[in-house]
Image 1 (cartoon, rainbow, N blue to C red):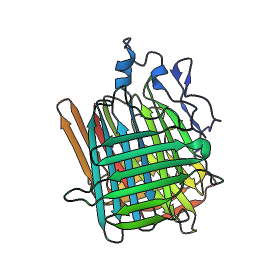
Image 2 (tube, rainbow, N blue to C red):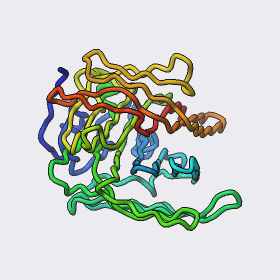
Image 3 (cartoon, helix red, strand yellow):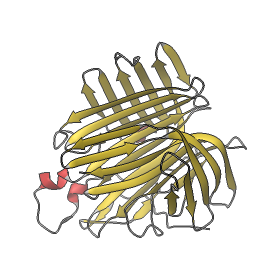
Image 4 (spheres, rainbow, N blue to C red):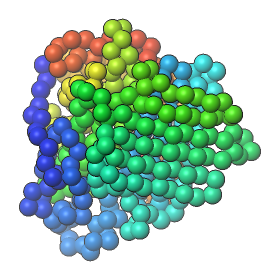
Length: 351
């Protein structure tokens, strides 16, 4: 069975200006990657270092019928938001994306999750995030006005971090000795309300599960990664969630961002290989070398966003589909996943 050291909480993922590598059980008091000493070989002013830091927060909510994914990114040259809502009963989806030029200096994601807030406003769109872990809650508000081919959508979500037994995961991983990425991930019940095309949707926390992720990093100029996320209830009616990634960090056996939660309990997972023998539109095979991860993801609805802008190239594919297979928790007990809805992410970014 794979294990890795889980460390107690600390103030920041740095020591004497150098990034640490590890896994922790709580968010840091502050994550300010501008405090990293000489992340590049040349001495750069603060604004240029800030320009190289990419950051985003992602929210995934799922019950028996609806699947919602909302992401808000600050890539410094521009801000980007995407909201996806999928109705599994009617096989209908809402897709919204917004690109807002400029995000350097005057706009950044929160550096702590204790009690912070950020909002993005533009014509016909409002997205507000209030991470308030001091009060064991995370609040999200989304308001999208109607367009010619899109009905209006409104959501108010509350992630309940106060449930007993919920253990989040914070990691800091290295690209080089002085450049790193940070990630905070947690799976918890969600309550809230959504209004879509005039239909009110009440989310019952006993049947609704949410994933929250907070990311920051000196990601490579040519960034690529694949993420797989699934939520739900297994055959024993246990709430579970997993987040698995294949990225560009080093020493992934010692530390990585892969995790499984069962009834809130955290199981760190080993590094995996995510292969797509017939391309990303066909089955994704997700396996490790320790016998803890054996999944197949079958995409059903493809959502592709492309952004070709001279030196900037971005392709973000987020298929919604079904997971099948088995995961093992820290006690060696299997979590059987049979036709559970989830989604994948495949990102190629040159920025």
